[in-house]
Amino acid sequence: MALTTETILERVGGVPPGYVTTYGDLSPGAPRQAGRVLAQTVAAVPWWRVVRADGTLPKGAKQHALLLEEGVPVRAGRVVMADARVPPEAIF
Image (cartoon, rainbow, N blue to C red):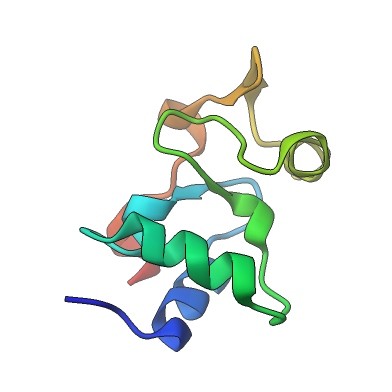
């Protein structure tokens, strides 16, 4: 089932500073939909808190800097998901 754009953006907004979520957690079964919504939105949401499931950063250096400012643990270019991933049910 596809989620609405508003639902995906609300979920992104629910990720607290210092934590991340994944595209798949935002839109279970349709992670590309979450990516498309974020790529097309002009809404002021904390997009930098959304990473790939393996912890890699789709938006590179800018995203890396914003995550470090929030204290998100990053090692070798990947978020330490065991420490920084917010449980999916916390953003629903």
